[in-house]
Length: 126
Image (tube, rainbow, N blue to C red; front, side):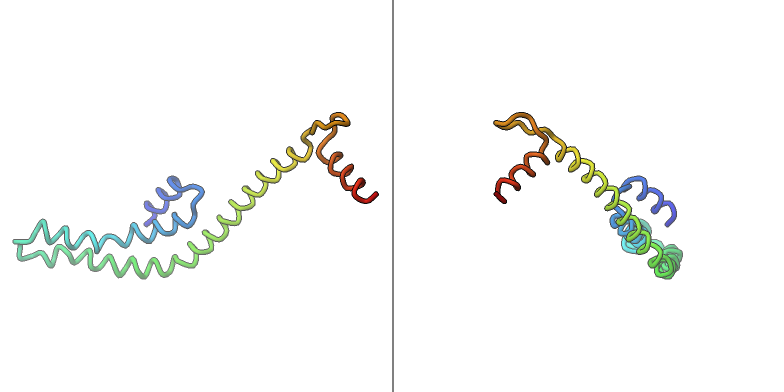
């Protein structure tokens, strides 16, 4: 579970929901993939039940561990999404400031965007 979490944090750095989904999805595939695989490999062996026993013990253990970890993972996802949204809002705010101060050329000469908007608003008042 720790290996899956580490790999998912590296691969999906800005996707906390995918990290959480991958954590639970990766670890819970063991029974769904393992039992048919063991049965296919050892189908003629009378001890096939013993070969699946560790897998059948591991799966309930994953469920218990996953239940204990789920609230922490949910808190991580919420916290990380807030961090990412704050970073995104800072990036877009910087771009808007650059657009507001952009110079606009008109008939009366070169003025900034805010000067043009202020002039238009005072004309509408007159």
